[in-house]
Image 1 (cartoon, rainbow, N blue to C red):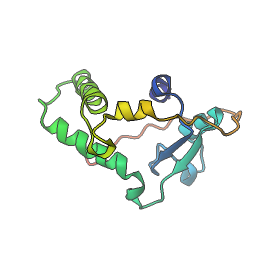
Image 2 (cartoon, helix red, strand yellow; image 1 turned 180 degrees about the vertical axis):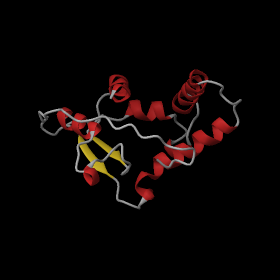
Image 3 (tube, rainbow, N blue to C red; image 1 turned 60 degrees about the vertical axis):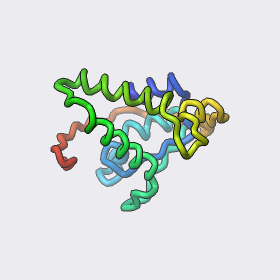
Image 4 (cartoon, rainbow, N blue to C red; image 1 turned 30 degrees about the horizontal axis):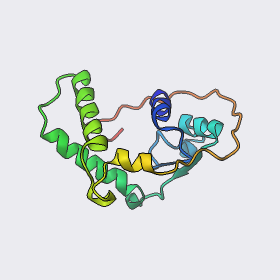
Length: 145
Protein backbone atom coordinates (compact mmCIF):
# COMPACT_ATOMS: atom_id res chain seq x y z
CA UNK A 1 0.00 0.00 0.00
CA UNK A 2 2.95 2.33 0.52
CA UNK A 3 3.56 2.81 -3.22
CA UNK A 4 -0.17 3.40 -3.83
CA UNK A 5 -0.26 6.11 -1.16
CA UNK A 6 3.03 7.64 -2.36
CA UNK A 7 1.58 7.93 -5.86
CA UNK A 8 -1.63 9.45 -4.48
CA UNK A 9 0.41 11.97 -2.49
CA UNK A 10 1.96 13.10 -5.77
CA UNK A 11 -1.05 12.91 -8.11
CA UNK A 12 -4.13 12.62 -5.88
CA UNK A 13 -6.41 9.65 -5.32
CA UNK A 14 -8.20 8.44 -8.46
CA UNK A 15 -11.96 8.15 -8.81
CA UNK A 16 -11.48 4.63 -10.18
CA UNK A 17 -8.77 1.98 -10.29
CA UNK A 18 -8.71 -0.51 -13.17
CA UNK A 19 -6.65 -3.68 -12.73
CA UNK A 20 -6.26 -6.98 -14.46
CA UNK A 21 -7.27 -10.21 -12.75
CA UNK A 22 -3.88 -11.10 -11.30
CA UNK A 23 -3.83 -12.79 -7.91
CA UNK A 24 -2.56 -9.61 -6.25
CA UNK A 25 -5.73 -7.78 -7.38
CA UNK A 26 -8.42 -10.37 -6.75
CA UNK A 27 -9.04 -12.84 -3.98
CA UNK A 28 -12.52 -13.99 -5.08
CA UNK A 29 -11.35 -17.37 -6.46
CA UNK A 30 -9.70 -18.07 -3.10
CA UNK A 31 -12.76 -16.83 -1.16
CA UNK A 32 -10.68 -14.15 0.50
CA UNK A 33 -10.21 -10.40 0.59
CA UNK A 34 -7.62 -8.43 -1.31
CA UNK A 35 -5.68 -5.62 0.40
CA UNK A 36 -5.91 -3.17 -2.53
CA UNK A 37 -9.65 -3.74 -2.84
CA UNK A 38 -10.11 -3.11 0.89
CA UNK A 39 -7.98 0.03 0.72
CA UNK A 40 -9.85 1.50 -2.25
CA UNK A 41 -13.22 0.76 -0.60
CA UNK A 42 -12.12 2.63 2.53
CA UNK A 43 -11.09 5.59 0.36
CA UNK A 44 -14.28 5.68 -1.73
CA UNK A 45 -12.45 4.67 -4.92
CA UNK A 46 -14.31 2.50 -7.44
CA UNK A 47 -12.34 -0.72 -8.05
CA UNK A 48 -12.81 -2.38 -11.46
CA UNK A 49 -11.30 -5.52 -12.98
CA UNK A 50 -10.64 -5.90 -16.69
CA UNK A 51 -12.55 -8.58 -18.53
CA UNK A 52 -10.95 -12.01 -18.09
CA UNK A 53 -8.87 -13.11 -21.10
CA UNK A 54 -9.29 -9.70 -22.74
CA UNK A 55 -5.87 -8.00 -22.59
CA UNK A 56 -7.04 -5.14 -24.83
CA UNK A 57 -8.79 -3.62 -21.79
CA UNK A 58 -5.39 -2.80 -20.30
CA UNK A 59 -3.80 -2.09 -23.70
CA UNK A 60 -2.35 1.31 -22.76
CA UNK A 61 -0.49 -0.21 -19.85
CA UNK A 62 0.70 -3.14 -21.98
CA UNK A 63 2.01 -0.67 -24.58
CA UNK A 64 3.78 1.32 -21.85
CA UNK A 65 5.43 -1.90 -20.61
CA UNK A 66 6.68 -2.56 -24.14
CA UNK A 67 8.23 0.92 -24.33
CA UNK A 68 9.83 0.50 -20.90
CA UNK A 69 11.28 -2.93 -21.76
CA UNK A 70 12.76 -1.63 -25.02
CA UNK A 71 14.36 1.28 -23.16
CA UNK A 72 15.78 -1.01 -20.46
CA UNK A 73 17.31 -3.32 -23.09
CA UNK A 74 19.37 -0.37 -24.34
CA UNK A 75 20.73 0.41 -20.86
CA UNK A 76 23.68 -1.27 -19.17
CA UNK A 77 22.46 -4.19 -17.07
CA UNK A 78 21.71 -3.19 -13.51
CA UNK A 79 23.81 -5.13 -11.01
CA UNK A 80 21.61 -4.30 -8.01
CA UNK A 81 18.01 -3.42 -7.26
CA UNK A 82 19.16 0.09 -6.35
CA UNK A 83 20.72 0.52 -9.82
CA UNK A 84 17.57 -0.86 -11.47
CA UNK A 85 15.40 1.54 -9.46
CA UNK A 86 17.61 4.44 -10.56
CA UNK A 87 17.14 3.38 -14.20
CA UNK A 88 13.37 3.11 -13.74
CA UNK A 89 13.25 6.54 -12.06
CA UNK A 90 15.27 8.06 -14.93
CA UNK A 91 12.93 6.47 -17.49
CA UNK A 92 9.83 7.72 -15.65
CA UNK A 93 11.14 11.28 -15.51
CA UNK A 94 12.04 11.23 -19.22
CA UNK A 95 8.80 9.53 -20.30
CA UNK A 96 6.52 11.84 -18.31
CA UNK A 97 8.24 15.21 -18.50
CA UNK A 98 10.65 15.30 -21.47
CA UNK A 99 9.55 13.00 -24.29
CA UNK A 100 6.67 14.49 -26.31
CA UNK A 101 3.98 12.03 -27.40
CA UNK A 102 2.34 11.95 -30.82
CA UNK A 103 -1.02 10.97 -29.36
CA UNK A 104 -1.37 14.10 -27.21
CA UNK A 105 -0.43 16.86 -29.64
CA UNK A 106 3.32 16.54 -29.00
CA UNK A 107 2.79 17.38 -25.33
CA UNK A 108 4.35 15.35 -22.57
CA UNK A 109 2.14 13.21 -20.32
CA UNK A 110 2.90 15.58 -17.43
CA UNK A 111 1.61 18.55 -19.47
CA UNK A 112 -1.54 16.66 -20.47
CA UNK A 113 -2.17 15.48 -16.92
CA UNK A 114 -1.78 18.98 -15.49
CA UNK A 115 -4.19 20.44 -18.07
CA UNK A 116 -7.12 18.14 -17.24
CA UNK A 117 -9.61 18.45 -14.40
CA UNK A 118 -9.10 15.64 -11.90
CA UNK A 119 -11.76 13.14 -10.92
CA UNK A 120 -11.76 12.27 -7.24
CA UNK A 121 -13.14 9.37 -5.23
CA UNK A 122 -16.92 9.70 -5.08
CA UNK A 123 -18.19 6.50 -3.52
CA UNK A 124 -19.06 6.49 0.16
CA UNK A 125 -16.00 5.39 2.12
CA UNK A 126 -16.56 2.03 3.77
CA UNK A 127 -15.32 0.97 7.17
CA UNK A 128 -14.01 -2.53 6.53
CA UNK A 129 -12.77 -4.83 9.26
CA UNK A 130 -9.17 -5.82 8.63
CA UNK A 131 -7.73 -9.21 9.41
CA UNK A 132 -6.38 -10.51 6.17
CA UNK A 133 -3.27 -12.53 5.62
CA UNK A 134 -0.43 -11.39 3.45
CA UNK A 135 0.20 -13.69 0.53
CA UNK A 136 3.76 -13.92 -0.71
CA UNK A 137 4.11 -15.75 -4.01
CA UNK A 138 7.38 -16.60 -5.68
CA UNK A 139 7.32 -15.93 -9.40
CA UNK A 140 9.87 -17.48 -11.74
CA UNK A 141 11.55 -15.70 -14.64
CA UNK A 142 8.67 -16.58 -16.99
CA UNK A 143 6.12 -14.93 -14.68
CA UNK A 144 4.63 -18.17 -13.36
CA UNK A 145 4.08 -18.64 -9.64
